[in-house]
Image 1 (spheres, one colour):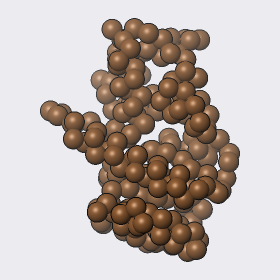
Image 2 (cartoon, rainbow, N blue to C red):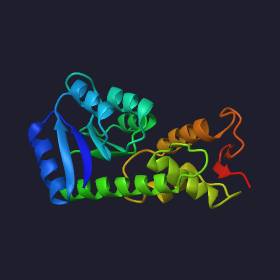
Image 3 (spheres, rainbow, N blue to C red):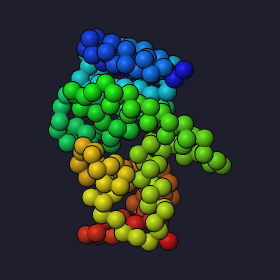
Length: 206
């Protein structure tokens, strides 16, 4: 059985999330305090972390950053805020996805399952030198690598990788490109794999 950590200060919401996830055979552990949630996330192994932003003790942004310093577990951030900057900040800190309250429990379950599956597939394919990428980073890199030499705008990449129904800003693409470069480029300031075509977008070098 898959096991996830829910860090959510609203116990009623957390229990509702847990009930729907466990009905889908996903064991769910709840922490309502940010500090305690972070400690548990670092000390125990989980298949995914469902992380609220506004928390007592310490906020979700700090928790996300600390987890990413030590682990590559999928992180799905949750917030009632709709500001694009919050989404970009969360993704920039290493979150894999962002879901806005209120959301349907069935959508939550679907996203949790999808991220766990993608992470397992990614880890299963890792060979030789391992480079830890988040799900979105991996999908973006694979898409570009499958089309070497072709230039894609930020809008086009957001549409193809995040999906037509995704909520967010295309600046997210730039954030993810920068994070990928930091992991795969010998010198991220002078990329040799993912090139910027000024005024047009990005391309994977042939």
